[in-house]
Image (cartoon, rainbow, N blue to C red; front, side):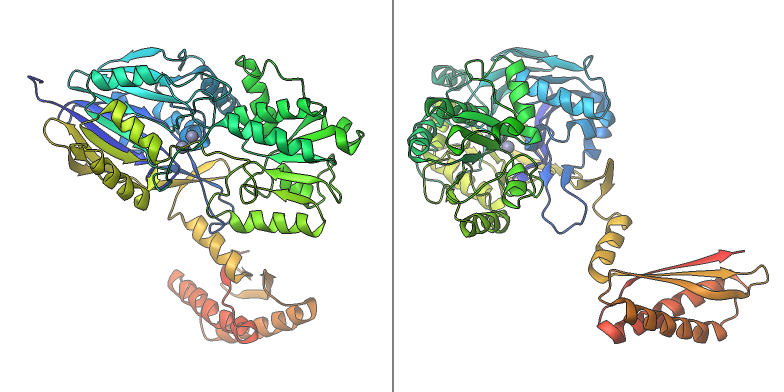
Length: 556
Ligand SMILES: [Zn+2]
Ligand SMILES: [Zn+2]
């Protein structure tokens, strides 16, 4: 028991109440004098609702204000929802980063793209290594997941230990990387764990997630039955799956060719960290195209139907080096992530139409999840025996189910929190003691912007309603010179109708202007407002749409 006034806090800024954009903070110290560490710093992907925006990151404002007391960022593993924001947000934090070799190599690439030299700040930690970031001592604990080097973190403080699982599953034959050490986990549990902060992704899934080695066995069986070209698509970051496809290709006497930027990048990173040593080198797709159909396997990016993914381009006959024809087979060795069904089924349909065979998790055993089913969760709770359970890495429905699950596992204090909650883990019973800013920032080009940024509203407006742009030349003595220059964009008119409308708009323009004198700023504003309202009406009467309007007065 502590004899001082120190408290231990947990505060997620992202990843709790959502799947993605993970960013967790632990604070320890006297009230208002806490020292902090950040675990993970990830992105989430947007749907199509915001044009031009693909990535969203947690708003780190709360910790930027306290960056003097931020002792470091510790990364559990290399998935984008855990590391994707690092090169965007680190410049505001400028603290040390701790990661195991594979994750470290991935983030180095990200910093390189941003032209930031991170070497002086990046600490590469060996698997199962430990670090001392006072007042926290952290042990990396190798688990299994769907990427190399997934780590749980045992975070020790003078007032208790926290087991932060990161993303995990129990894969007894992960094929590549370290095996899970269940004895070690039991020992951690026996030494006393105050709180477990645990992955909730598959809390609704009964049983176990299954092993990568089962997928490999099944892929070999499948490959043996296929005569023509084989195309496999999966997440590039799943290096065990990548190795499986290499091995299966070799087993059936085929060459393997990697297609897509991230597939090639992950292959190189994995090789540089000493993985994939036993696979035959891939061949270039430009050479593969000359091989007989029965001699090639392509491993492609785009398993979630991403428009720029290799498989999407291949399906649409837009790939310069890969073509498919009747009788070929495409294997989607991945989960259909909710929200991506439309894009994926569009691809499946296009393939079926061309008489190309489609194999997916819907009709064959070609994928296992990287997250624990309920039986694995049961094991983890029995090994770790936490006093407090904090469900994370889930939407609200997952968190509530996990809360109930923890209750059924006789956890003394199951908790339910969301982004921005400050949960006091010690002293006393766990309690939400504060709520901090926990919004999101959007990545627009190379800039970070707020969700309510005006540019986004304008962009959305223009993309839905079209644009009417008017430039008006004004002389020194406030007289309108010549006809206004009118541009209509994104509205459903052909050239002929456009010309008619422009005449109509010009007439309306002079009508409105004749009633307002442009002798001061106030009348200029009045004129702009009146023009906007009247000219928009002209368009509305034609097509029932109210365009975004832009009016420029140019003084000459
Ligand atoms: Zn994750
Ligand atoms: Zn993950």
